[in-house]
Amino acid sequence: ASQTGQAEAIAWQTARQLSAAGMPARVMELNTLDAPTLAAARRALFIASTYGEGDAPDGASLFAERVMMDSPPKLPSLRYAVL
View 1: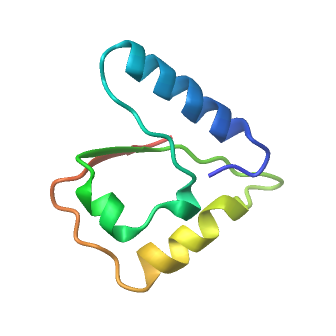
View 2: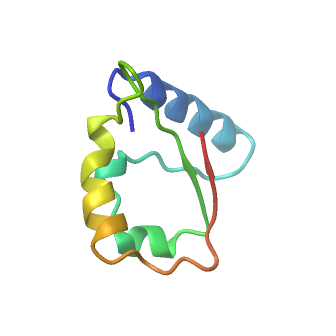
């Protein structure tokens, strides 16, 4: 989730490094991620950046509303990190 593109650039750089190390990686805009895709994942790295005075990026608003607020999926086996 990025307002100015900084988090997106880090996501692509990270994906290239993971792929080079033999670990498949897929970059997705957070607003395009849905509950079934997230539930099918074994690992996730969420990269988000704020802007202004700590405002949330527009690129996370739909994800927060659709996936996390309406009926959050159960993700007992998902290993995740947030940067």
